Image (tube, rainbow, N blue to C red; front, side, top):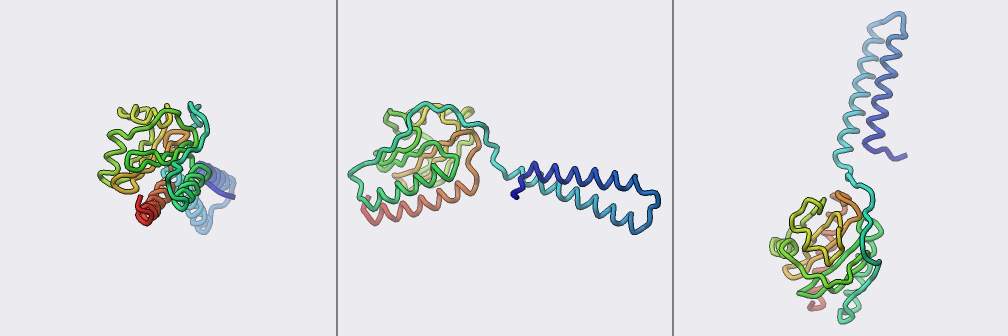
Length: 208
């Protein structure tokens, strides 16, 4: 059985209530019983605290958005087979093992791969994407609804609720859109960031 933050908090509260009810149902209170009650109360509070800590690290994902676009897969046929095989494998893994709805890989002015729920319009990187590759830092937009530069991503996937921009090198990046706000975990970001380094090595090997 897998416990999450809410279930741990609930278990802790139930145990705390039980030990209080048990205390008041006992006629004779001994020093040993008092110590046991104190330890039980402390254990219950610790479980509740752990539950709150778990909730801090859980993604606050909402329901899936009704995204506009078709589920498609396009890639640049001029790219070497070794590169396409890696990009196809990685993009499939991201779409199936994370909350990603769409993925785009851009290299030196060309969208070399587009997969998932994507727009039929041609995407051109704007300020956010260019800043990511300039600084070589992952940019996470947990909720694009409140991001003033969200129009940059309209031709990627209209009304996409969350976005990751992951630099590959100073001219290439991975753009990933999520089904809902705050849907990507730290583990997702770390895995994708490590994959981007592998792509960079493959690009260098194939002079891309």
